[in-house]
Image 1 (cartoon, rainbow, N blue to C red):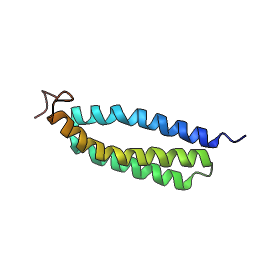
Image 2 (cartoon, one colour):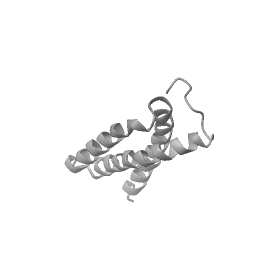
Image 3 (tube, helix red, strand yellow):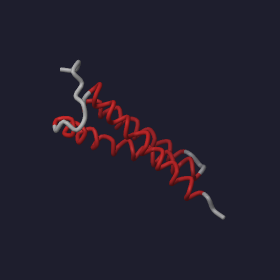
Length: 94
């Protein structure tokens, strides 16, 4: 039996679960202007995925990198959700 696909799926699931609150907290504390951090981290993870020889580690790094890129889009959408009142606005941020 091959479990590589299941492991990559688990990494994808955990990556989504990790980045969801990071986007919410990132927008709350830093606004959408934190997007370059997600971009740089995503690019680094994609570079790692190209260098790693282990297929699961390579795929995992690529999934995390792409999740980081997706989070940039989500930061902008999170700003709109905050404006609609769906999420709290940080009162200390101007």
